[in-house]
Length: 516
Image (cartoon, rainbow, N blue to C red; front, side, top):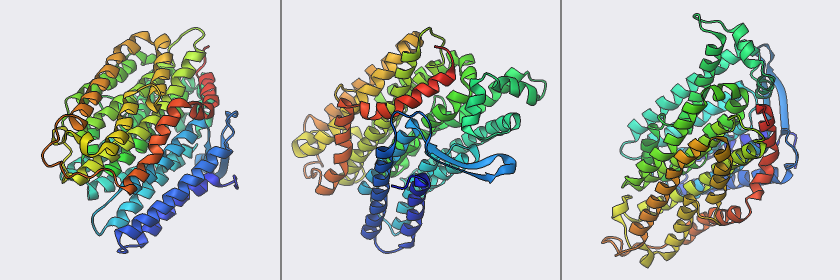
C-alpha cells in the first residue's frame, strides 16, 4: 500500500465515485445502487488497509501530506491521521455502505441520490483528515450541501421546512466558526491546527489575542472568550448541544431513513470531532472559565433529550432524541477533562477514550436502528408509530433479534459495544466533576425505560391488525445488518481494538491541557 497519498486517494474516491454514479443517469436504480455500493465497498477496504498500516504506538500524525497552497495566507494542503481521526474515518467508511445497501430512492433521480451520499462521505473524510482550517472548512461546508439536498429532495412531507431549518442552523454555526478562526488567524498568523495547539499549550494564546485584538473597548480576556464561544457554537449546532438541538428531530424524521443513518451515524460526529481536534486543545483555558455552565448544558442535553425520547410516539423522532442523549455524554466528558484535579491523568484518559469509543459505538448502533425502522416502514405503508406495531416477535423473529441486539447495545447492556464507552465516560467524569456525573445519571435510567418500553410494545403482546402478513428480514436485509451486529458484539468484548489505536493520541492531547 502506497502511503504517500493515501488520504488524498481515499477522499477523492467517493468524490469522483459520486460523479460517476450521477453520470449513470437513467440506467435504473438497481444498476446505480450496485455501482454506488461497489464504490463504497472499495472505500471501506481502503479504510481497513489504512487501519492495518496505522501504528498504534505512535501519537504523531501519520500518512501526512503537506504542500503549500496559498503561502501568503498561511494556507496549506495539510492532511494526516492520528488515532481520533482514524476512528472517525473508519466510522464513515462503515456507515456509508450500510446506508447505500438499505437504500431505495424510489424515483428517477436515483443516480443523484446515491451520488450525493458518496459526496457526503467525501466531505466527512476531508473533515476528519484536514489539519489546516482553510482546507478543513471547505470540507466542513461540502458535507452540508449533499446533506441538505438529500433531505430537501428525497425526504417526507415536511422535508422543505426541515431542510431549511437544518441549513439555517448549520450555516449560522459555520459562520460563527469562520469568524472565530479569522480572529485566531489575525492574532496568530496561522490556520494550522498543530501550531495553534502548540501556542495554546504554551499558555500564550490568550496573551497573543490580548495584544493583537483590541475591539470596542473589550478586554483581551473578553475577546478571547468571545472567540471561544464563536468556535463552540459551530460545533454545538452539529452535535448538537442543548439548546441548539431543535433542528435535529425534524431533520432526522423527514429525511429518508438511509439518509438519517448517515446523519446520525457519521455526520453528527463532526461536532464531537471538532471539539476534540480544535476546541479542546486550542481553548482549554476558555473551557475552564465557562466550565460550570458548559457542564450544566451537557447534563441538560443528556437528561432532557432522554425525557423527550420517552414521550415520543414516532419511532424516528424517538431515536433522534436518543441520539442527542447519547452524544450528550461525549459533551460531558469533553468539558470535564479541563477540571482541575490532582493526579487526574488516568481519569482524563478514561473520559476521552470513552468519548471516542462512544462516538464510534453510537454511530454504529444508531445507524442500525434507523435501518430497522426503515424496514418497518417498507412493510407497513410508511407507518412508523410505536402503536402501529405489536407482537412482531411471532411473525418476524429474526428482525426482532437483530433489532433487539441494536437496542440493547444502545441501552448500554454489558457485553455489547454501547456499555464500554459510557462506562469509561462516567469512570473519568466522576472524579473530575462529580456533581455533573450525578446530574447526568437519570439520563441512563430514562433511556433504559423508554427502550425497554419500546421493545415491549413493538415486539411483544398481541399481533396488531395489519401486521399479519409482514415478512421477516430477507436475504439482502440480513446481509446489510450482519457487519454492524457482529461489531456490536466484538467491540463489547474487545473494546481494546479501538482504544489501543486512540490512547496514544488521547495521552498527547491531555499533555497539551496541562496539569497532572
